[in-house]
Image (cartoon, rainbow, N blue to C red; front, side):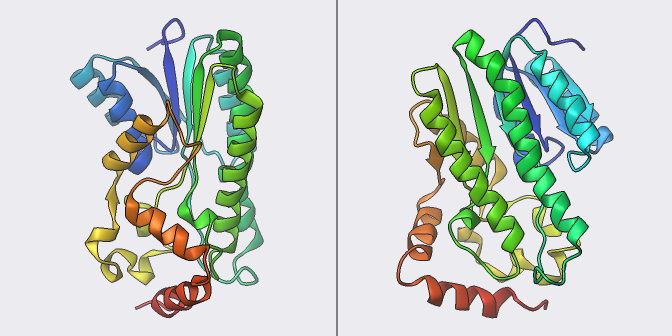
Length: 266
């Protein structure tokens, strides 16, 4: 289903969780979509559901952003969308374990997906948006960007890059009509912690429910904050408090508490 001649939002990591929530929120606003993820069957189901419920057009593109060739294909597609209105760089995954123990190819895949792919897609999208003096980019980071943590070195560093990169872009784009946001969620109810890397740690079972936010709550808060800022958006008072504590003199105490709770599987 072609969407080239209408305003369109590109969402990576769209097959579940935060990406799917953004797709639903945007579809409810009658925004057409290019949905990107590895799992084609999930994308097909999501696209069909959004079209049925909201009447929007949704194109899908099955792509593994850890593969540079797939990134290049998506990069080319994005650069050709003359009516590109929004890019949401959401695709990502986490690794847990001591940096010296995690296979280096796994670490490089994480950097490829969360850093290199995001940078390349921003570079592909911006000329289109700048030519129209309109558009927005949301780079999904994490509160982990502000709280370095043992066993999460590569993940925290990648998210930190996205925050600083987005802040710098915001300065460059001031007055251009193009908005950027580094979205920094805390604990969010998605499939993220179901991965083989995190499942043995039973993170959802170990943390109280009040600390968690749903994907739909997160996406709605992000889109609401986008027009006026802040550029670095931490949704929810509890998450802002966690970051404030993490950056204060209580940092060491917080990290020790986290280490005792999560450094070993149940």
